Image 1 (cartoon, rainbow, N blue to C red):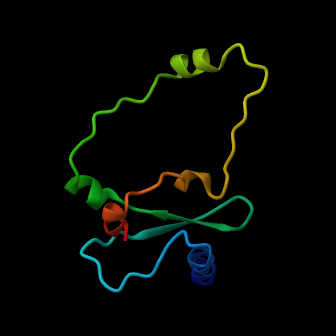
Image 2 (cartoon, rainbow, N blue to C red; image 1 turned 120 degrees about the vertical axis):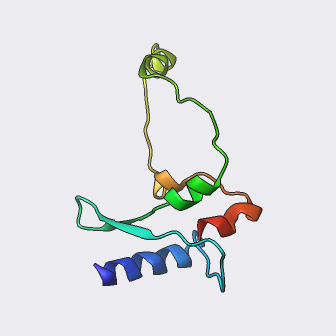
Image 3 (spheres, rainbow, N blue to C red; image 1 turned 90 degrees about the vertical axis):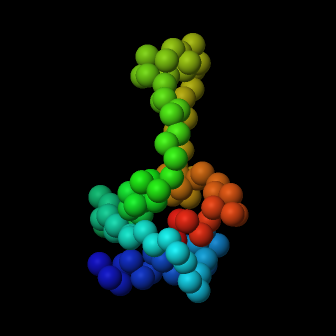
Length: 99
């Protein structure tokens, strides 16, 4: 697993998804997850940073609202671009908090 994590981290560095940081006041642990295809997904445990950040009361829509919004269309597409779960852009001034 350690070699798979190293390879995945090197891939993420190469494509510019992550970058090296000399020092950070924030440190979050990685959680490697083995996928069904035998590859590895690098997840991050942000519980500590979540405790330090103000709560954002933004409720998620109910499944009924989501289904209603998609009804009447002929095609529904779900895509996972490049590790789609990481597609939220983080402001430059907040990036250090995600180390």
